[in-house]
Length: 245
Image (cartoon, rainbow, N blue to C red; front, top):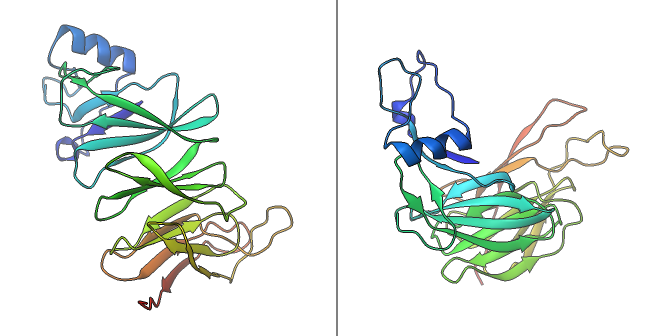
């Protein structure tokens, strides 16, 4: 399931737990409010709850426009994109109820031959990148929701992906040594970044890849974190020099 919580209504001195999907749907069918366990307080931090069973959920993000919620789901081992229209309560195709009794549109797009482990929107909102257990990175045109390009250079599952602030580049990390830097529109290789300075104690060790990567919001700086089983987990900041043709 995917639960959306209003963090402004959370309090450190109040205990609260997310109800099960069954109780959320049952409550939505009977009343417009959900019990929170906050004593007499009826204000709940839970805004919406989407039941995706029997599919598994590996990641979820909002679109930059805030109009859609995208979940990486898997069913029978295949990775799918499940997209909800966040603001439109009118029913269409399959339905999911929120605690207030509304109904949300749901669209499903087949994406990978394995689970999807990471998702990222480009800052301009035009592209969505998906990284899967099939060692592929899919580059999607958001307007048509069509995968227009695929990065196939990796040999291990994709751990993390990130778009540059100008939406021109996409970085990919796996358990392999270094990072793959590519053009965001086509997936064409721009270059490889070797992190060095660490080894993983997996299959005899070897140079470490990155577990999580993230571009700086205003420059071509790339933060890379690595959980290394041999040495301390290092955080590396990479500065990319981009030359315009």
